[in-house]
Image (tube, rainbow, N blue to C red; front, side, top):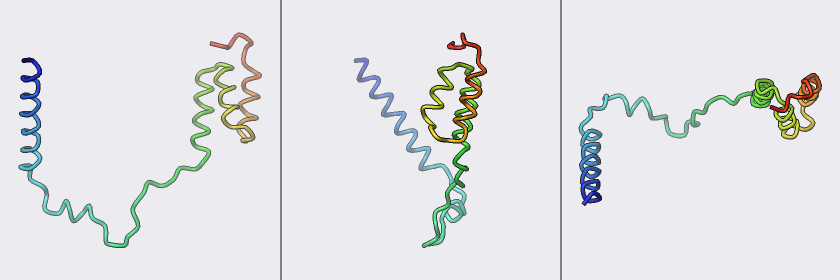
Length: 99
């Protein structure tokens, strides 16, 4: 019985959503504004510089303030210029900073 009621409510809700979507007026220029000319390249978000994500990871290790966080950063980015920075910062941590 509960399933039948649940299905009935879901069916009514689905029907209501479809009706809203169909009956909602659309600005006449909305479709024209969203279309690009044929053959035009797709717009994409500009790429971030490659080091941004790595710097954010180092900032996260700094925020954590633990040797484990720095070790994780170093393991993920061997040979990167920020690896040396992370090692130096890790060495300055107190010995009990394994939080």
